[in-house]
Image (tube, rainbow, N blue to C red; front, side):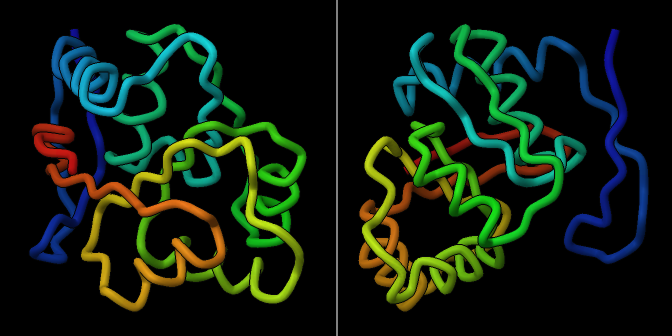
Length: 157
């Protein structure tokens, strides 16, 4: 069995990438062991599950760890901020653009979310300025995640 993901990758040309079910489980195991996903965790999924990074982290990670997914129907900085302030998240996956928008939402607007234990940014580079904003406004040094649509996450730091 398997599934397909639409991607433009680094070429900008849309194509279908085929992945096996096993590859998703293997990716989830990388999160389980590399980032210590646990059954008590709640992953806030504020980005579409059709995004390769989010699919692997959220679905793959949840399947192997038994943690809960908190699905946000549509990413908005204020809506995601509200979920985080309510304490409904322990793991927060972001891409650089959403990390920046979320940091801006927390600017001068109260304390950083307390329940979050891990912020993981994937699918793009994290500049030193973005890293400092995440630390200052969200209260954590963001972990980095690297991979591809074809293989899923292959390295986390």
